[in-house]
Image 1: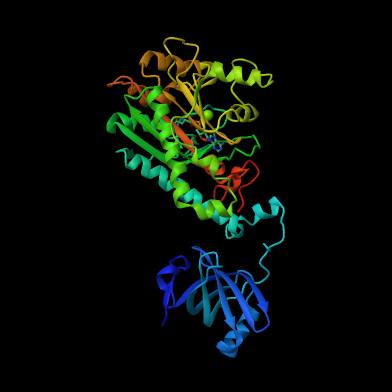
Image 2 (image 1 turned 135 degrees about the vertical axis):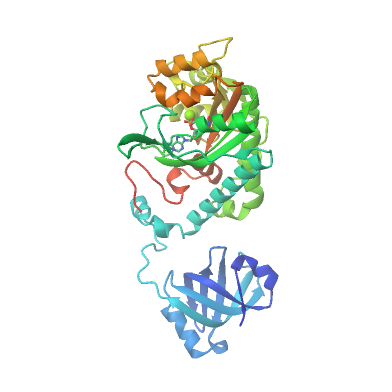
Length: 431
Ligand code: 4AD
Ligand code: MG
């Protein structure tokens, strides 16, 4: 019995007989030789079947195999410089596991709705496979970054009694006869935990009933949110730039092959090292004006504004000091200029928009209570949150990074729907 290996392990098995288990990606016939492209999730390898070297039965099986049929192939791994992974399999035996009938995704072009309806199969294709591998690496790098800096992972709840990010995008569910909401952000719970552990992060799915059909919005997306006691806005911005730089540099190091498959211009990513440019909201408005954008002072930036702003820089840019009026209730105001919140957003280059939102939090009990009332939030649901300002309140800050927008930027993917395995959008909950 030949050893079963993953295709990616080929270099360790040169000239050995091995078995590969996978699916037929494509095949090509050339007289008495047949070339099977087999993928197993780790890579794709070309398997060469020569008529004079195999049994009649094995050779005939190559006729039966259709795209995405599952199979086991046994043969000898031979180095081949022309092959993308550097090896070919010289086949001795083929075992068919199942013949796939009429696989719907063919090498021809398909429309986006068709592909989205077949997302469960689409994720097998080269490009989607590469994007999801990068997503995996982004998440691993993000976790490693915090774990290596002594942050404690705190899982925040999905069912919540209150809104963290405004009441307009809440998904309501019935919780044994009372309303409950799917979480929009784990932040408020991370704040509680950071008073216990000093530095924490949460990472999980978050939900927003976004009625906007843009290429940057999902209704279910994943957010990683650090929260640190005794951190001010400056500390927060510095943590954010080190974090994003770590993620990008890790993907560049470990996922070259995927970025190549995606034809990503990596020169733009090499540059992503601290310090990032940091500009005041007023300065950002000036930039928009200079670029001919008719922007009403005091508003939040829209997608188009963010694109103009980020185009001025070759790295992500951090905009800080947004007007307090347009920002969340929990943000602390700058005592020096109280019309501004101690808030910051990080905008990715090349038009990928906001990837991080964060702030220093209001730490004074009376001020926070006032804000909760001003925002017409249910005081009772926030009693526990107010407690944090009663028992050893300290300055603290944090931020949230959206995984999908980050992956879209790093992979150069236009729409966030391709950066999550099974996207949820306003008009899509299938498959
Ligand atoms: O700016 P946001 O709303 O910030 C918060 O939720 C804070 N509570 C985070 C914190 O301070 N702990 O969202 C943070 C990030 C955005 O910058 C964006 O990357 C992503 O989450 N995001 C979305 N991604 C995809 N689809 C959506 N509908 C998103 N909404 C926000
Ligand atoms: Mg935001």
